[in-house]
Length: 157
Image (cartoon, rainbow, N blue to C red; front, top):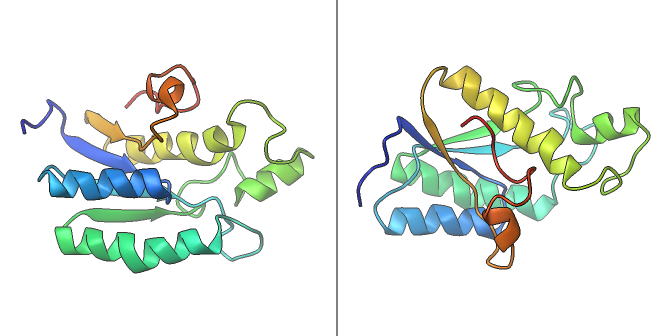
């Protein structure tokens, strides 16, 4: 497999089955990402909820050890590293605006807590470099995977 004309390949690791599948398949094909970045939506001090406990358990027990074994950097991006629009978590951001998850329109939570933070992290971490971002989509999400959902893609990378 020929490496694309970019300096970095980064998997935006959502913690679910689709990003796990991308990670495993890329390793199987001998073309793994250079890094995996998981954007945690929780308060780093545990003050409010984040992902499902099983998601965190899977990352700790399987994703991180696999990345370590394969020489892939795993970045657990907290709001101490890149905040959620000035807040320490998605929950705090939503609470300050008196809204509930799902109430802000198409994929607002994803855009605010993951896409924007991922973009900022990548721009800070690898300034001026061409970064290829990988995102795992369910096979039934053809509209998102094709770029039909403006909040599913990572702009500028």
